[in-house]
Amino acid sequence: MILALKDICKSYDQNLVLGKVSFNVQKHEIVCLVGPSGCGKSTTLNIIAGLIKADQGEIKNNSTRMSYIFQEDRLLPWKTVYENIKLVATHKSKKEIYKMIYAVGLSDFEDNYPDELSGGMRQRVAIARAFIYEADLLLMDEPFKSLDHSLKISMLENLIQLWEHSAISIIFVTHDLEEALLTGDKIIVFSQKPARVAKIFKIEIPQNQRELSQPKLVEIKNEVMELITW
Ligand SMILES: Nc1ncnc2c1ncn2[C@@H]1O[C@H](COP(=O)(O)OP(=O)(O)OP(=O)(O)O)[C@@H](O)[C@H]1O
Ligand SMILES: [Mg+2]
Image (tube, rainbow, N blue to C red; front, side, top):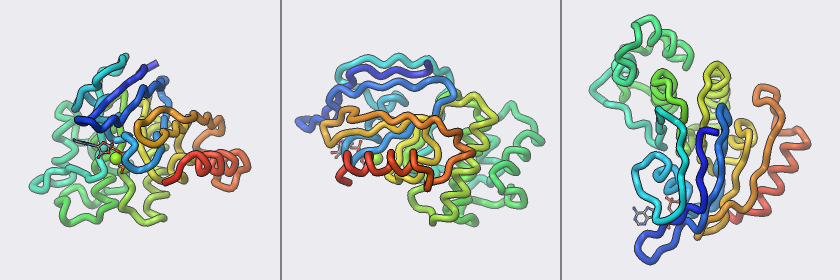
């Protein structure tokens, strides 16, 4: 197990956001967190990342290197694609960095600056950066939210491929059930605020064999939709 949250509570002033949230993440698992807007998903990631403190509860974090992909890409605008990636991978050779740039489909753009790239391309750089850093736990907070559908699907394929060839565990917060159904080994549904885990769905179908029309995925989708009023 790489991470265990037990009875995590968090309030902002009088606003009780997390009311005893508990879940585990196993090694090399993709865990998707879904739930109504404002229920505390980003707060949960921020607690895991150590950016904010829980008021109560226990976290057992066995990861040694965490990486966090935010909704916005957080690249350095004055550095090129290559330099942005090199920044977190100072010990990596040029060849290894080029290989990663190739893996996210950005060969030919290594010398471009972030503002010369589309939103999807910038997110690819953020993903390349997270993977070359060799984190063992990757936190992602709706990184594909601003992308159009076909780009999103290609980003998900990219992500799955990189994940398959690594030992990384991923916690993926998303509003988008399609993303959760295509990537998650587990889908954890949060209740309305104060959030608790309403239900955990396990998906046994290997990610590279999933299609949204598969009966199991349709069944989970319908159940999640019933649980959440977005
Ligand atoms: N720094 C903060 N100070 C005060 N209240 C906050 C702070 N951050 C979040 N909140 C409140 O905590 C609640 C949960 O916020 P959070 O961003 O974790 O929700 P979320 O599930 O990620 O929502 P969304 O799906 O819209 O991104 C909201 O009511 C929000 O207003
Ligand atoms: Mg959020």
